[in-house]
Amino acid sequence: MRIAYVSPLPPRRTGIATYSQHLAAALAAHAELDLFDTQAEDPGVIDYAARPEMLLSLHRYDAVLYHFGNNPHHHLDMYRAFRLHPGVAVLHDTVLYYLMAGLGRGGMLEEFLFNYGAHRFDEFFALERDCPNGDRLRYPRPERYPMAKRILTQAKGLIVHSETSAKLVVAQGALCPVHVVPLLAYPPMLEPGTVATRAACRAELGIGEDELIIGCFGYNGPTKRLPVLFEAVHRLRARLPCRVLLVGEAEALDRDIAASQVVDRVIRAGFVDDQRFGSLLRSIDILVNLRFPSMGETSATLIQALACGIPSLVSDHAWFAELPGDVVRKIGIGPNEAEDVATALLELGRDPQRSVALAEAGRAYVVEHCAPDAVARRYAGILAESARPEEAGSDSRTRRAPT
Image (cartoon, rainbow, N blue to C red; front, side, top):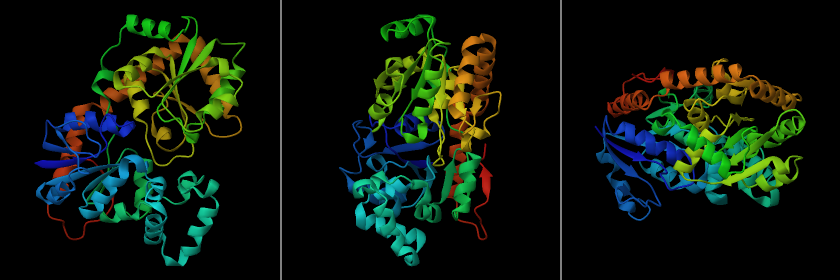
């Protein structure tokens, strides 16, 4: 089976690029792949921005796989390719508001009307008025307008990573089979780390052995709830020596840190390459991955942390709420959120047995459900199914991916 694999790829600064790199490597054992990406630096990847005529060859493949996120900088060209030749779509987010906002005012209006109809025309202008400085890419309530209808109604198949996302896309009108496939664990994260590497990394960062290191990795946007974490760390200042390591970028990060009472407790690493990412991840004691509201996304960072055996705190919301209670420590959303985070950090920081039990359960979960070859086999089965002639009477019922 020949597959056109369309996705952002390294060195692009998006987690989907890293994810695709590992998934493509695993999938190559089950099918013949041609990789497509704009801004491609690898000569083995087809740069369809530089060679747009290659998009006219997509019909020659048995299946075309698209990886969609909500970032217009990385996915707009792919969306245009999808409109020319629909295929199987992996939705890393079920809310695609920002992707469509990247089309500019005219393109976004076209998508808005396609999704919601001409009778809601005036609503578009109300949306614009709610955007800071008229910037549609800064609209504060994107979950109101998922704007995914074109993908949901034209895709030959949909892959999501959680039951929450599956329910959302079905409710939004998906017309093709919806498959739930777990996120893949990256092979390097499944390999044991070394004490020496961890110690060297912590020493380089100026972190003492008696300090608890709390890690936040990835794009630390407003849904990651960093102010809540900072408040929790402030509450623990006199009770538990701890630092917060931030790996990744975000527009409001400087503002959030400056507004906190733990400026001296925060270490920023910025955007790092995959090797450095792995070293920093293994250097932390606890991962905090709060998320609210959800855009239907899952967290590849969380899966990698669990694979490394790192105890993790998550919001009791959306996909995170689906994870077993012995695999992650769940934090409720509400007025007591910062206090609950502080309590959980104190419990794990002071009780090594509890921390180890959580770490071992998390790693066991990933090994069972997220092994690269098992995930790749599911993708191969879905793509093979999409290549078959459509059967009359097919519906969009959620399916478990074929094993």
